[in-house]
Length: 338
Image (tube, rainbow, N blue to C red):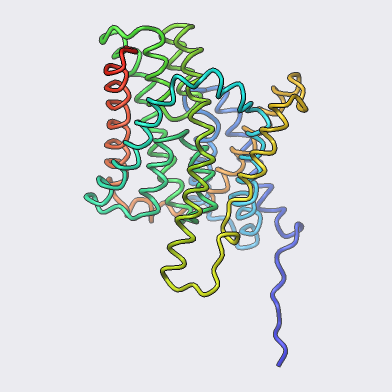
């Protein structure tokens, strides 16, 4: 008996939903430039959620929306690699690795233990833990294709991370002066304990130019750690499939190949194949791809389902964020970097 295969949607079927995501992303980009403290990615996911809740895009838009939230999400991570020189970051950020290693470990342990106590399910715990440990929305975006959470979980995690980014930008400079942190000490604190790059920059430079420069370098060092974390998650997912008896399951089926292309892109940047004059345009392009992707995530998210989750993910985000901030200060105090 012959079987009928269902063809994958062609690009033409993706156009309506993709056009909607791009249109909302352009609006989000403008709003992000107007209010940089919030930023285009957060505006994108909020506009997507509002559109889904108020108008519920029709069925024929789903292929394009899915394309935006999945494939474009991966392209955006690769594009980020074109603007990140691993050699430069490694050379200038080595002194932050001890603090970063402690804060990352603290974030994952806190997410696991506190998440279990609060009853938050594993995928949402992972997203909040990775987002807090590494680099906010970008880390969450890189993790999504590996653990494959529901879109409303992704939206909830990004919203939670954003909330504490805003709190950190407003609170950290005040606390830094209260604790009499040096410029380098505050830069280390901001770079290891604030998630989103724009929020790190905002907090760092509001303290001092030296603090801002150092915080940015530390943040970029953290961003490179997204690679081993994603590979570790892929291996962990493969092991879980094997334990569940998933037949001839292979790691290659869920291996995050976009991370390999991220490394290739970053290698091109490192050896100088990508001219410095292109960096502004590349960064802008990568930012827009992320906004389009997160707008697609918002368009796929169920606000009612997010609301039914209750305050527990917010409490988890608060606990993980506080543990990271305190552990960063503790390590700096112990090693005399304060």
